[in-house]
Length: 338
Image (cartoon, rainbow, N blue to C red; front, side, top):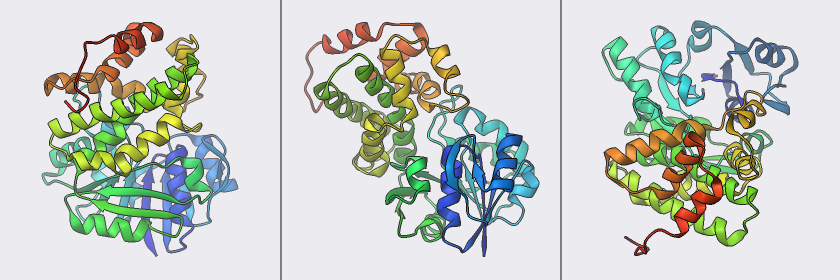
């Protein structure tokens, strides 16, 4: 049996653990920050706090100790919220070995540095150990609840390390969870991060009572500005037509299980951001953290991202959602493919 460690026992980390555990060929260790989550998993084989109603296989156990979590692991999957990634790896690197494959499954950007999660991980480990880790990024349209119940799901693993990508594809794939490989780490990670901002905007439209025309326009133009930034950062435009781009964008903008979209709905209805976040009971909408970093990254690369900029104004400067939409609709005329 292979050993796989998942760092982060929120809904997505738990969903992945269930998907991996049902193969019957892995022992899965979940590192969980919360005591009640560890107790729930180890005593009742369920994560009652973040993914209630889904039974974890017997091969999944939980711990709160990094050393115990990663001991003997062939693959370490990073699934903590983006704003905790650097701190966790700064605390954990001493227990990691060069042979371990690191897979980032967090969809976000580091606010202060604008780095993608695989870059944060590589920077921390290389600085501490003197050599770069073997790292990849897992992304795609994948609601945790649907993965946990076995709905057919397709994702992609991106890495410049072909051996890592092929290993993750083989170890993670089963008839309910199909994994493709990709070598465009930049595109896959940025796609997974940037779509969260567009999903908040989609929720705002819904909260304002706008219809399908508005959502369709938002998704299409959101994909266009995502693609501009991906290409400016060195990624491939075709990646944005794939699972980590269009696939994840459509899911997150239209699916009722999307936390980012749900947060946007409440903003559109007039809710205040601190109150909305407080009502999420510890669940994280990554778009809240990613949006400002995306705006600053776009500024560095001189890329125009009007939807993202307006969402930054709503989230961080108290701008009215209706005013933001009015400004988007009254911008000067453009060529669609420019």
